[in-house]
Image (cartoon, rainbow, N blue to C red; front, top):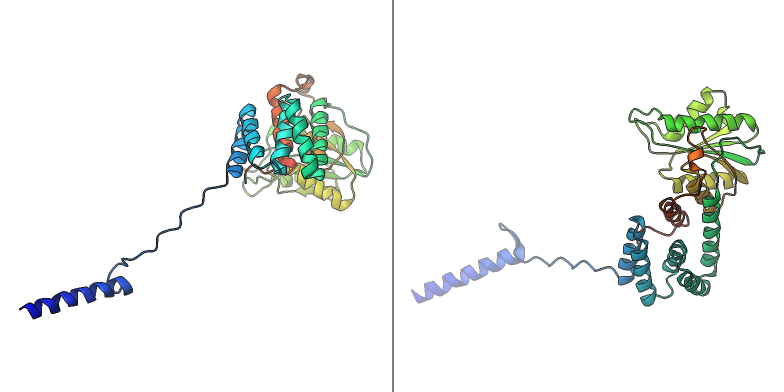
Amino acid sequence: MQLWSRVRRLGLVIGALAVITTGVGATQVLVAPAPASAKPAPSVTLYNSAQSKFSNGNVAGGLGDLAALVRIAPNDSQALALQAIWADYAYDFPTKAAALARLNTVSPATARGVGGVFGAIGAGIATVPNPLPGIIGPRTAIVALGYGLLPNGTMRPELVERLTKTWVQALIAPSSPVIVTGGAPQNGVTEAAAMKRWLVGRGIPASRIVAETRAGSTVANALNSAAIMKSRGWGNAIIVSSANHLRRAVADFIVAGVPVVGTTTQFNGWTSEILPPTRDAQRGIYLDVTRTFRLPAGR
């Protein structure tokens, strides 16, 4: 009996080992533990937190995160650029000066770019909505910015008003090219496609119009239109948009590398936008230009 008992126990052990090592006829027992996900570096966490706070209007909190970031990563050019730009918004001129001085050592090209950002912000804030068309030449593009379509792919009244001013401007300057910019398709139709169709239907030759159909934001409007203009040798632009949108658009286009020589908007409601923009509207300009300057929203 003792011999039989030992043989039986040995058989059980061998069977268990077979299950463990081969998994035949049973669920695998030995499973390698999943690797623990690596925590992001503190600089990444602080950068992302700062950008989130800027987006949500907590500028002081965002600057606090950046201050902590540059203490541990003093050569982070993106953080230094953000710190200088948002310190300017907060009127924290000592922090702005210190960030720019450090940035000029770390990346002189980025420091020069930030200087251009400040110029674009100033130009955007100083823009006064104007319902009159401008007198422009053949190297000045007329750039009409899109607006969200209805679900069935038709245009909202806001976009029709923008296009009406684009049409008038195109008649006043018959040798100037036209860019219509906007993606966000509805019912298979992009904003730019609908805009071009509207203009062609009112006598503007299709050959004059370039449809930029990928942009989903003002930042993308500016960057994508700038690429088109550069590829075709067009030197500057007159921007057509709604009165409450022009200042942000002007700043974005300048940061994207497009000199803005004029703007035009609808007659209805433009007088209410003559006064300087509110502080919150200015924050929107600052937020947009950081994106146009290609400082990532997160990393």
